[in-house]
Image 1 (cartoon, rainbow, N blue to C red):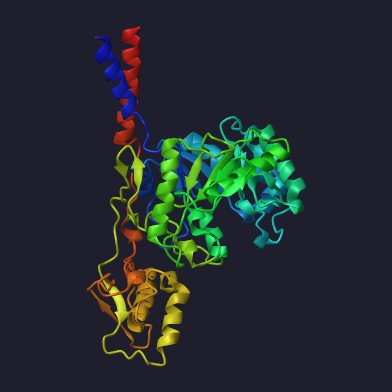
Image 2 (tube, one colour):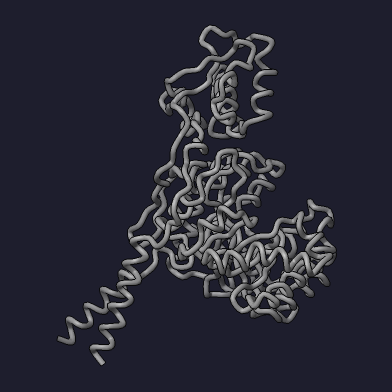
Length: 493
């Protein structure tokens, strides 16, 4: 009897395990045709993402997350830092409208408020230097007044350029001299109020910024040239970067401050190193670390990690590079780009219930001449209003011929304009509508074009408001299993 009891308990424990326990993801909404929030919440839950990071308090998104079982970090955009830093009352109003109301009325499980997003980036030239810390203080005061400070913690997502090492190894880590005093104030404030420091780490950007960066050091499969720091050999840039921050905190008396990895991932387009092969290799390596509970040499316990990102965003700024619109594990419509093993024999699942515009495309007319003097201006016009980042050198559609290149641009404009009547007629009689998918196949084009897709956009007008996604069947099974486990122990003892 004891044998069968042990087997039963073991079975219950196994089926209650998460796919990647504690896995988070960033949900960005900079899209011309965004997925409906209820479909996204189902996508999160079906793929085991039980934590989500938002860049702003979008009411539709927050409502969809209500009673979903997904923990939420809600962000405050940088352009709100100034008003929130100037007035406690403004912070109280923001907390009431974007935190308190959604917790009490909609049952949203908000755990963190992220004050700003990488506000100390050198590229911002000190724009937010004097407003971030006061805004942090005022938001914390507002959470205390609302009676939420134990449930909801404040944090600031920072870029890895706020710290550095003068010795070239993690143990030389410290905060930048120009913001050292400010960072000490922030770190002490977070420590005093139980808040974590959130860090964004992007190995891809190391490779993008330096063509001589050792590519194998960006991934998790080892390197022939590790970074040796005393008795520690670092074989990947993630661990080296993370531990540089840990050393910076230790040197300044905050060695136990919790750290969250707020953004980490790999893009699939917009650069020669932004491709599906590398993205799958990086993200699978990251997921394997999470599943196996691997931390870093300085902190063996793995931190909470938010993958960047969930879906592509075709209206996101491309100032850093064309790759900025292609960080998603999924395409803009929730379709799977590449498969990932999430652990426990689970793989990615695509979004369900997505409705599209009509199956038609706008392409360059068969009888149009590629030497037509109006063609360059027509392509430029199309790409001024639509996302053509996949056409760049080394990108997924970078190997198209002139006619296919123009067709891609025309179609992206046509789809972005919701296939409106006349939107395919703006190109000086160079374009025509077709019902035959013009997407190239790998047999007809080179490797760089084998993943080129001529999109059809989501029909945002056809998606009706849906009921709250509620609790998934997998979650219900897990809860039922936990109840069974409790009953077994009660009967046994």
